Image (cartoon, rainbow, N blue to C red):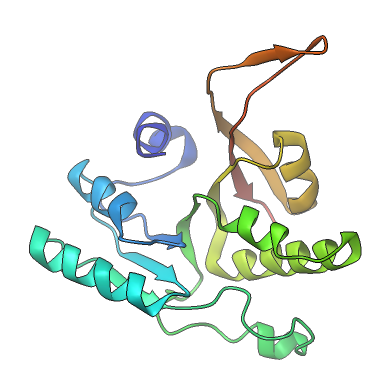
Length: 193
C-alpha cells in the first residue's frame, strides 16, 4: 500500500506534506508509521474498535517518535444501521472538515462482509460500510482497500455509483479452470460524488 501511494501520489493528486489519512482497523499502527517513514507528513488517524489495539498503537508510536499519529477507538459499524440519515452524517471529532484525502483498509471490509449472517444482511452491512467510508473521505479523495475475499469487480460493485476505480495493486496470479486470478485484491477508488 505504501509503495502504491508513493508511486502514484501525483496521479492521485496526493501531497506528501498535506494529504490526510484514516486507517480503518489500524491495529498496532504500523501502516501509518510506514507512511511517516516514507515522508508522508499530513494528519494521520488510525481507528480500531479494539481499545487494546489503540493503546498498543499509541505506545508504539510514542516509543518510535511518531507521537503525532493519532489513534482512536471507533467501531465503524457501531449501531444498528437503522439510524436516521442525519445521525449518520454526524462527523467524528477526528475527521477534518470536508473529510480526509485517503482512507486505508487492509481487511476491515472483509471482516464486515463476513460478519453478516446471510445475503440480505451482507447487502445491508456492506452498504453501511460504503456510506460510512463516504463520510470519511473528501470529494476527490481515495480509498485504498485490500481484500482477500472479493475480486476487483465485486468490490467495484459494492462501492457502486459515486466511485471510480483509479488504480490497483498487482499480486502474483494463478490459473485455475481456464481463468486467471489472484488471491488478494487491492483497489484504489476515487470519490467522485
